[in-house]
Length: 66
Image (cartoon, rainbow, N blue to C red; front, side, top):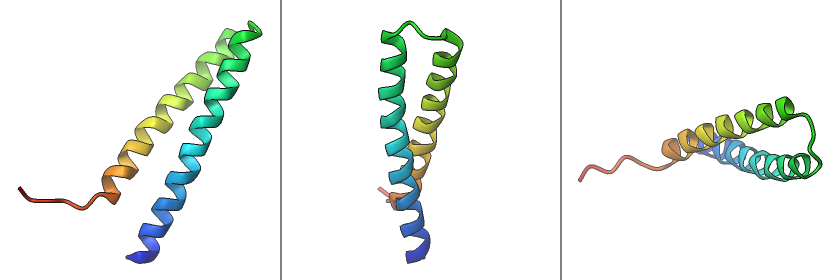
């Protein structure tokens, strides 16, 4: 169980890092009026990462019965 939690935390950290990196790349490409299709693809990837991050975070939070 501990290894699984550590693995999830490591993956979560990697995904957050990639999400931040995509922010930077998208901002730079938008400033330079680059290929809009490429920017759209990066934004979709960023949204997918956001969903995956939320899913991982929900797996790491224990279920609490109110």
